[in-house]
Length: 159
Image (cartoon, rainbow, N blue to C red; front, side):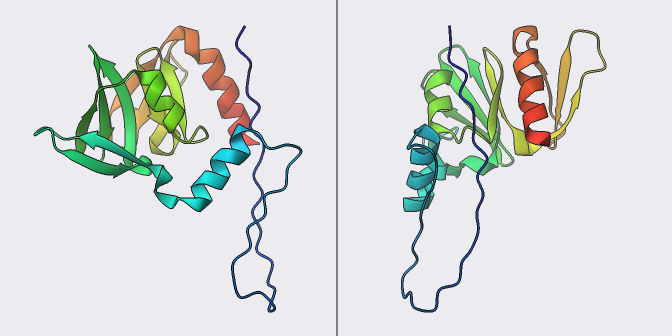
């Protein structure tokens, strides 16, 4: 089966050291895994949090990952919705999911990934269904198959 990746909590602290002239960033963990490597890449290259997408005139545009509200598949293309509009990307959904920050995004169906920071509320009140209301007033639905995983991710986030 699929291996469930356990996300480790990230603790960030600043230690003042008057003897240092440079910034010394140290990552301490039980092992160097994918999560650590992704964090180190992010610190090394802050632009890692951007995505190159295409606007309606097929021009390449760089957008910040944090501006993405949702990503959904339509035929052979991805629609990337941001606060400023919808952009396009020609790649499979799983391909873009691998590029995104895993803690910020969550897959809610075979066809859609959402940015957790852009969610207004999760509505579990309809029996067996999950309606997700986004801060931009868009609503979407999670597929039943994904609901248990979504619930466990939300419990994890509350801790």
